[in-house]
Length: 87
Image 1: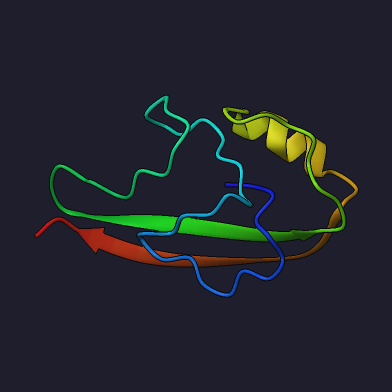
Image 2 (image 1 turned 120 degrees about the vertical axis):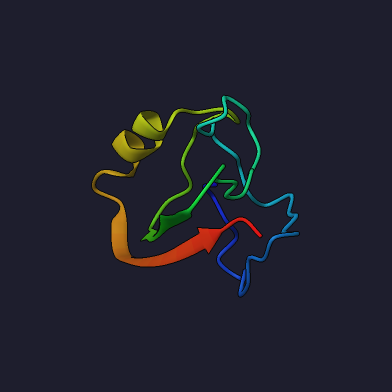
């Protein structure tokens, strides 16, 4: 996801907003699809960047395109890591 509205205070599993753009995910789709490991526990890292601009990219942009367009516009960043195991 990119171009998340700066007033957003929470993003949960049911997050819906017209003020966000989805890039192409690992499944080849332009939506969020949460973790779904077949077996075992998997580690997931989420990075959040605060930018000083809106990225002029279309829905379905590739991660590499998003990262390239962010260069020179990152004012803050953070990362969190969690684990998920299918019940």
